[in-house]
Image (cartoon, rainbow, N blue to C red; front, side, top):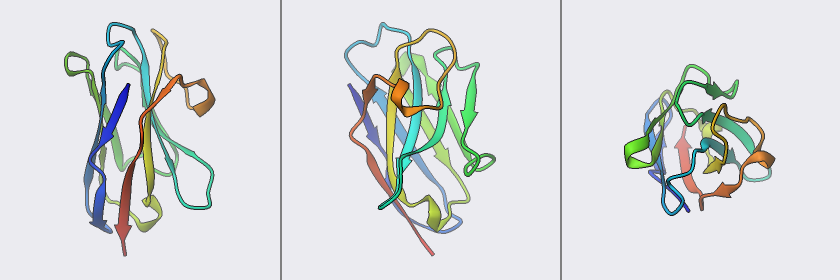
Length: 123
């Protein structure tokens, strides 16, 4: 199971940090991805990190502003979001892909999903 947390309301230009904690099958190797979905829009890839942490990917719209990281000992993946814009407003989901290497940018390849946390950026 995945538990996403840390969402909230922030002004444009501000920062917010999200956490995704895994429980249950934490002995398995898995990549973690963050996706977001704004009202009326399709789900969008945000960032992903491989199990080792070596492979990291970002969506074009967040490159340079967001940072994904992980703590395997804590079974937690973090998403630090800086320079937030109103267009970053969405429900953010973390997901786990059971693989030992690499990370996918495609939501269909992820096996487990968290419940989502709402991020609202006011202008």
